[in-house]
Length: 116
Image 1 (tube, helix red, strand yellow):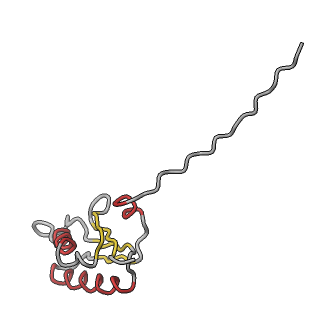
Image 2 (cartoon, rainbow, N blue to C red):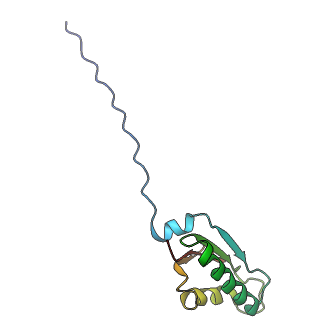
């Protein structure tokens, strides 16, 4: 009686996960710096945000930064800082930023600085 040939078990190499792009990549990338605006009023926050982006636009082009606004749950009245920062990213800072998105769960933004 002839012997049966044993089949070699072929090992499948696991597929590598798809490369992240766009907003997904922006949100998982570690920030080079984080600016926390908790406890600031609109005027203070606007000055700090503008200076923060001007400084990092030259020192960290192409890198990600985070701006923490908080959700405004302790504000008297409607939250101010999230809308202020969103407006700045859309208009005043648009030349310094190549892409931006709100952080998961709210309370802040991730932004990729223009360049590189």
